[in-house]
Image (cartoon, rainbow, N blue to C red; front, side):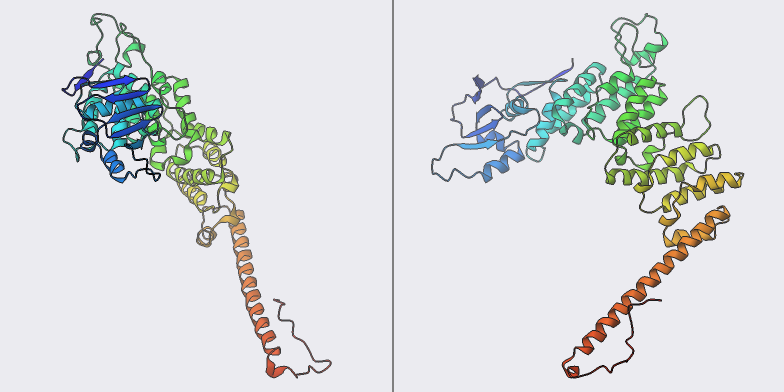
Length: 450
């Protein structure tokens, strides 16, 4: 395991039960409490390295009861807990510490939490941890160890992009076909079979497949970004990973599909029989996984908009068959779309790119669209669209006319109500208090619109 030593002074930290004490000639003037552990330290070493501790110490107010006492700080939410803070405190005192693949992630997250940047001291803990982390990620086994420790410091490790960096390092090594890039521990002359060669590890080592890498990912939804998962899925396809491995990734992506972007969803078709430019079947499976668990209204509306954009992108592909296009569009329920302009645009592009479709096939395709949910602009376009079946154009014109009549009726209703209110105010005006309506006089009903 690769290691890195920091600090030059001997150890001056002593553990007494649940208390760490820094044994120097000066008495402690600050107590930092992390969970059940207490650290009796000195302000100056902490101030010179940590921006957060500098701020907390300067803002500290003694108890109002006048009891006085030392400055006491609570850091219960520091990533890595008491162990990570202990290493950070030792670093502040320039006491010797050893970094390795098992503690560098926690220490890096703790350093970020404490604000230990080079603005406070050159070669501060963030810079040192970053430098060593790069060395860790250059080694397969250490990369795996570092990735495993990320579980205990989420979401801080994700916010610092440590999890994606670990996976990227492992994936890049898995793509390496040159066995010399790996330490084979004396297996230079050993035969390497196809299953072992794909990840660059000779038969003398324990092979680690893509499925094992994916299994190391945090399982909690949203911790690993959808963009990263889609990138990893492309890598798995490129390596011809097992169906189980790809299914695992597709399920993860489907669970948080609303966070995906259109660009990332355009997965190229890397199959042996390439019929379409993009892997439509893959996106279909991801969408099915998303639809398997009924989501809230907001996520499904976002997915509907995403899929309308995706359908518009893949529609020009002349090899995209009508049943596959329909199946992909039909997964999104009608209620998910407040306006059907997006699906109409995708359908129009598909019809333009597939002019050989029969009239019945065109009508079948147009069933994906709700004519009542088209905007006025889309209705105007559809009414003049020669690619649409005549029956659909008639429906569009009918609903457009119905909408127009409803708007006009509503306008008259508002106008008549306003006029009635004005007349009522006139009749009750003090100057008309003695007015008498002659018997038999006509009374106009201003509420009737037609």
